[in-house]
Length: 156
Image (cartoon, rainbow, N blue to C red; front, side, top):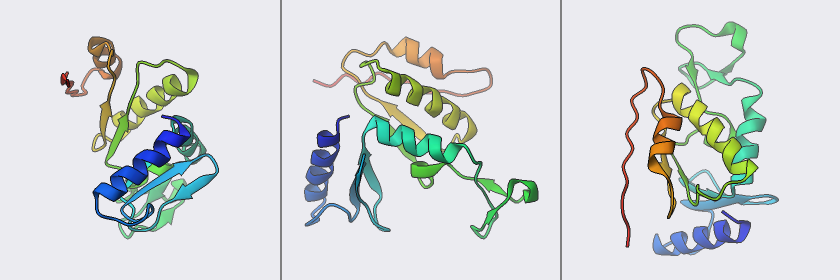
């Protein structure tokens, strides 16, 4: 998704939600610009922004105790809950459009998303494409002992 697409989609969805400006429930995060707040629940961003957000935070594991306090990895105990990195800290879903458009960013992001889903099965991933080979993605995201649900939804 391009920078302009992320901003335009955020604006349109924000209007559809009855909000006067972007940055409330709906926000965006692109290279050097961000419109998000504590109430933001839906963030549109470019592939590069998401990739950067994941990889920067992924270098240092983040562990939190039951009270939501960050604890060093060495102090981790059985009560510690692992959270998702960076931009995905509170994410429940990742939706990627145009996954058939192959480039380094998209391919690397798919690798990271596959690992995130295995580590945090509560996160849901939606991959969208007009020409996606669903069997390839199903095989890519599948692994022994991991339950994967893939559906092809035809949209006219």
